[in-house]
Image (cartoon, rainbow, N blue to C red; front, side):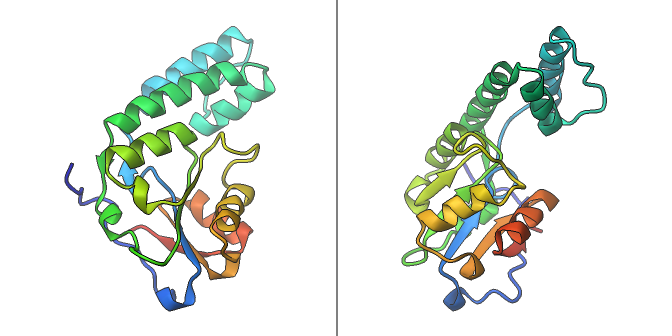
Length: 189
């Protein structure tokens, strides 16, 4: 697929590539756009929660997942989300920033709130898997963004130090993750 005009520029002011050990990217909204109908998925998640006796009104997707885990139906809701993400990864759109992945020398990773399998499918679909050395998804380790542990796991796997790693993302949660992990942050604009 061709690049999309969305997510086409990184504000990397203050980040000199010679001053970096690694670059880590968020996936959805940064390198690709998953083809997930989030509204329909949230409705399915809400139905599972209601069946478990939880009224989910006013929750977003990630709050729904948290509520499902607390209600003991986390694995059922996680399975719904992961299936939608995997399907959405197969039909995802490659964003322009994917064409700017560093080549040669600088290690590259992905740290995403999407499940790891969806990340890998999207990277394969768009010919990016060879450029990415390590992937951490929502289900790769017990914690998920904006906790720092997922990003720190990628940084460690890449043999980098947090202060010499640039995390590129498209959300406030990505910025918070970078701050908590002690990495630099570059927003996609």
